[in-house]
Length: 312
Image (tube, rainbow, N blue to C red; front, side, top):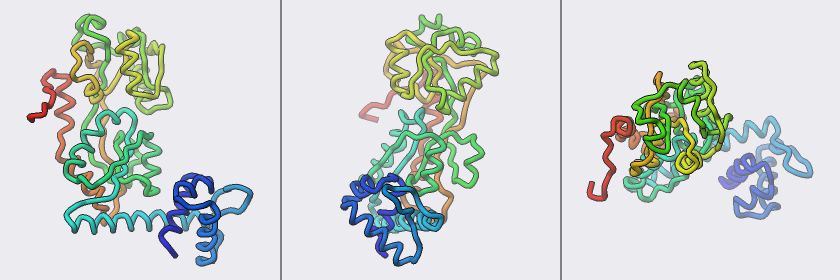
């Protein structure tokens, strides 16, 4: 049995297509099919359902697939452990983040890059459900997501900050210089919000319902950056976590005020609760523990934030 056979198997499960899996593995489709068939002969069980095209795995194949994923993850951890013994940590840190945290991910990956220059980084925008699934399938090392979710039982959870929701406006005149605004008042303004299938939107919709109000949503997007652009250039309003104020921390003409009653949610780093833990996950947890994201984001509300300069 060769490691590449397990890699072919896991890639085939992810792509659900022989030709695409072969292309990603840099082999011909006949070579990949032959490797899977040889693995079936060696183990004495049918792994893949046979047909004109990929039709999935047999029940036995699904169990073997789980072992293949664990084996490849353990091998990657072994390589990382060996690299740490050479002082330098190498490999790839795979991080999944919910869309509203994507603008601040660099506050974690930047220090990681500074400490581990040989460690590559892969950052993907994913839903909480997809982050958990990929962690379980050993396709991610860590995730950045909401922590108030019962499905996180069994994961290692590391709180990082508590986001507070703000009304975002083009400038101070659009909100009459207000220092705060109620959800009922915000509901009367023309809004651009994230799409209804996104967790952030469901949180905001629930807050409006609690206030017995219905938001005047005139534009929807699945991009945080498009949301910002609609407020900046289309004279719309939005509701965003205060962590997103980092997108325009140098612009004096954008305005954000807290919504009342306060709505806040806990954000943190999640990973598989395994022992031993892979060196990459250990490194990510250690760096996250040293960064005070809460103080940085709260400073946007208090007005005490000072941009970092090259001399700092």
